[in-house]
Image (tube, rainbow, N blue to C red; front, side, top):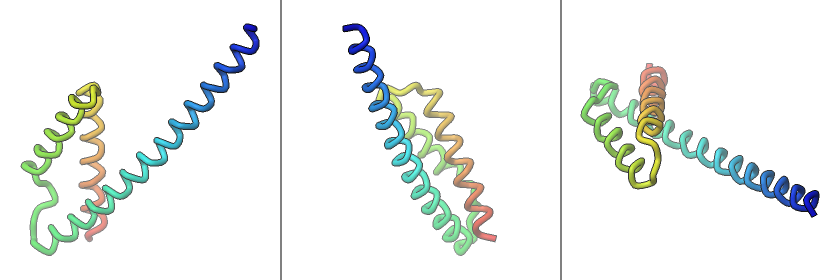
Length: 99
């Protein structure tokens, strides 16, 4: 019986890992969509002669992330780091895609 139980648990483990892989694919696809929108924002900022860096908007985004972290029971520091990475890449793309 122990061998059968181990096989069942190993199968469950593989199923969960497959589900995580699906979520990762979706997550990265969503991030790509966000980056495309960031590039479009950069193009508009350039046409309006606005600076890429907008501290007020960044604060709104960070506040939104932290609120969502709390709502979803996620560690604040983790979400803050994630937010900073996404904002950093968004600004990099806005600068590089608009030259």
